[in-house]
Length: 417
Image 1 (cartoon, rainbow, N blue to C red):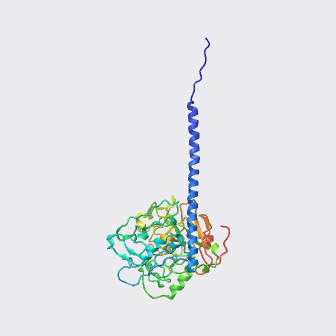
Image 2 (image 1 turned 180 degrees about the vertical axis):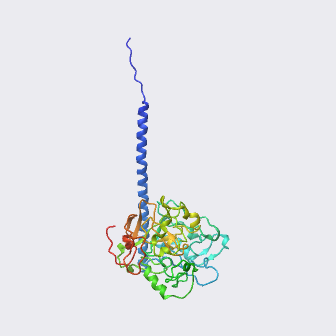
């Protein structure tokens, strides 16, 4: 009888190990690629939403022959007495509120115009007048409404809709902010107080010491000519808080002037791109990079231990957390430090401050120009000398191409960015 040899089936151990190794390598290559594709899609959506806001801005200008007011609304009416927080919005409403009808949000706009009752019994079932209460009162339903077109998909933060006592939270977020130029002095208020009159807000132009900063916010009803002149020379951006501007003011050209950019909203991880620090005094007014000393030298993307969120930030004052608030911390920025830089304030959110454009994208921010185009500006853009003092009037910006793009009429020639 002849015998037949039988060949064993299956894989050897070496073959299995090689196969596993190849699969692991493929996964290691593919996962980052998939994540990159997803982020690219999110960034495109983010830019598209910003472009829609830009189109709304142009439609608004066509209708009213002016740009939406950054910090406007109903004014405070008394020098002293009870806080008008629930009876008016104290001239703090942001420009995004005015754009709602142009962004197919007519129903939300109608609610704001109508005013109405607050949601929380802790405030005594107050009824607010037209245009609502102060923008930090989350019990006013429109302020707590999430508006999808104001959010960049790359930002994972969600709106904190909890409502602690007095409503100093519970408002919704925005990743899109208006450009206020390349200076700090009087940019936080435009030079006008809550009653709409030119006033110092406690700061004398001839005395920028820390002690001068201690003055309370005033609601006097008398203009100061020196403050009006100073504010006119320091507010160099396309938008000017508590003032009207239009495209005709943009003598540098619409395609060379930034209208809006991105801000990363607060996550609570002590990152410099989304966490503001406060009580930094007045040195930043003449040395914009002053607050950078608080960055952790071992982790340059985070604040150092001495400037942690716990002792430097306020519970209700988080970057990008109030879509309806026009102040620097919430829906505005300056082109002083390059994208991805710090945000800090001399006192709190209503004081002199420096707000930087930031995002969750890779090394850059989507930026809307006044002509309606959206371009991606990298963090490596020329930003000049961050230690230089801001300039006044129509002088060229000391902050390089980034600073020049943020001014509306300084006469710089901008190219190659």
